Amino acid sequence: MCEVLGYVVPPPPEGFATWDEFDRALPPERQGSAFACVDPTGVGPRLFFQRVPEGRVAKNRVHLDVRVGTGLVGDERVAVLEAECARLVALGTVRVRLLIADGVNESCLVMQDVEGNEFCLD
Image: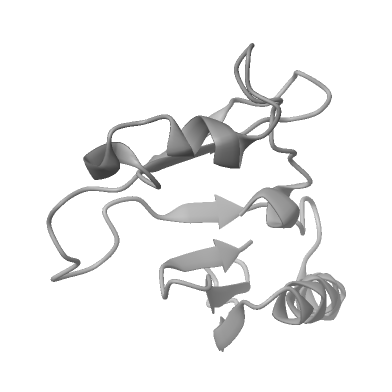
């Protein structure tokens, strides 16, 4: 998700050269259980992802819409969505479907991240 948003991974905690080193210092049951990324400009919110013990049995618990077509409509909007989709597919995401404007909502593109979680390019 970091690359989708142009976010970066913050530096590891003081005393650790890498996040892998920090992770190895955690108890085994907590290793690999969390991840964060931040807006390098400091304007956007920090995103924190935490693994939970329950398996996914239904829809995502959180659904993100990534705004890429602000103020655009029609073919111009779809072209911008398609261009961003192509960039993200190269990073490992999957295109699910294009939802065409219906008079109430503008067009958006449904995508899946590498773990199968859906998000929309909007």
